[in-house]
Image 1 (cartoon, helix red, strand yellow):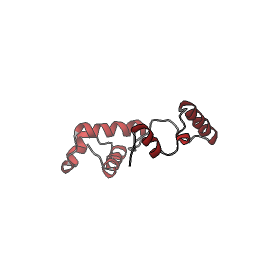
Image 2: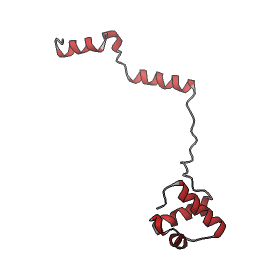
Image 3: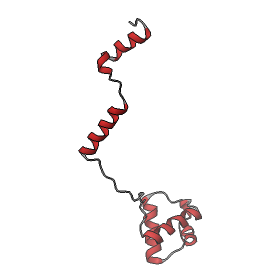
Image 4: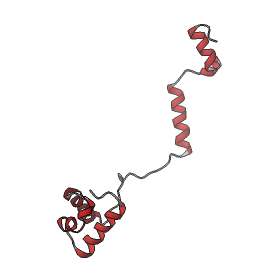
Length: 102
């Protein structure tokens, strides 16, 4: 399968300008060790989208607003009622639960 960007760009140019098929490209580039299925996959993607770039899921990437972050923090505090600050540090918490610790 053609994996480098240069290989995919070469396949794209040959497909769009010279209308080469998968078997013709394999004959031209015998030293590349491409598979017929791999070239067909790249060609079908070129025919469908016109590009060889990888596409995402289509979901927009948005960052949460400060209001949403504060709401999430408030919900997280509601879910975790234990406040370790009232017991002091983690080390003092370990000494009270496991006995004396040095």
